[in-house]
Length: 92
Image 1: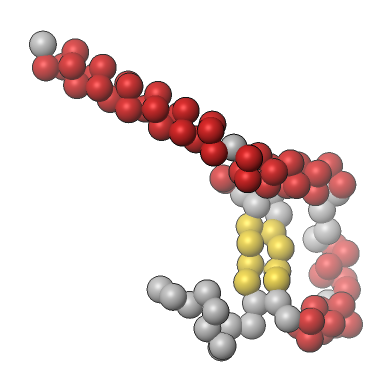
Image 2: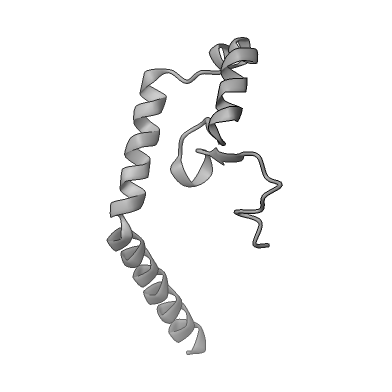
């Protein structure tokens, strides 16, 4: 939609579920928004903060996403091999 950098958007929310295999989310925004959250939302922040092992899991999943292109390419190759074998055996 091209809204990534629209001037009316105040924040971005990044979730760590499904693709990263973790749980949790991060709210990103300008410094003024961060200051507002720190001053007026401390109970929310501290009641929803993640334990250390979850933060480490998110960091490691992010590293794998950055370095894991060869894994995705390998899986895509296996999928293509499977499709080809399936179509070949089905055609007989």
